[in-house]
Image (tube, rainbow, N blue to C red):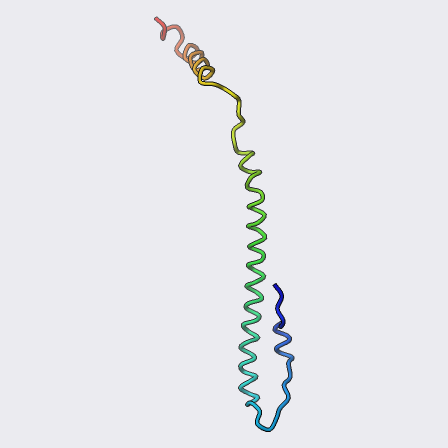
Length: 99
């Protein structure tokens, strides 16, 4: 997004005066307000662009994080799990479980 004017352009702008021109002091006060708004807009735009960049980077990293955090698929079936559980029960409780 490009702007036609910058705060410095407004500040440096000179107007010709005519016979029935505007009150120069009123124009200067109004332009000062516009300059302050432009400066505030430029600052806010820079903040939002930085925030947008950070969020875009986080969004790009998200699939990498979720893949790393996901447990690996071992291919274990219910039968395999039950077999392991049975083996652990025998080890923990010994022969008492099967007496």
